[in-house]
Length: 254
Image 1 (cartoon, rainbow, N blue to C red):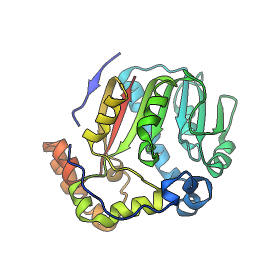
Image 2: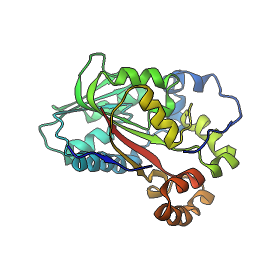
Image 3: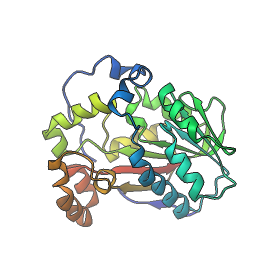
Image 4: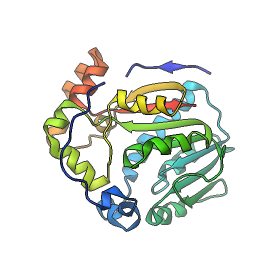
């Protein structure tokens, strides 16, 4: 298998503010609060996310017979993958929100199933497990990573790198992530990789992906940063991520 390590650190800063009780527990996702803030469960991002998954699978020459999406939301990513990857692959999705499972169940098929839960209960349940924009939502993400490691040989994670200089200066954007989408943790590349190292993951493919930039996410002021972000990234990817933000980390690991 090809091994690609794209060097992709910033010191953590005190974001300030108080986390509400709902964002400190799974209630935010199970009592309807998340659905109220995000009624379509970010389905508009699903084609982009699915393509990132496909890119990694092709780049590393993976041939999974089964794929599991942890934190599957409305299930649209699984649906898109099932349409673009070989039809011999079976898919399972897990989410702790009954609202998400209600939506995703409409996409169930002979080779696609969805389940209420944080992750598969049994070890080695799939060849490849996806955790796309999940880690930042979990209180004990270290414990989550250790448990996830047992559920499949390969794990593909997307981790937003939100601890950037300009976002710390505009602290309201981080507080919005807490209130609107329930982020409990904020990462730099180094913090994300340190967490994986602590959980004894073996890194196979690590790369920046430009989620906020490609999808034109954020406020108008943030969109104005697109050009300087891209210019600095072409010269120094690490510096661009540390200074401007806008990137996530894609990590395929064992």
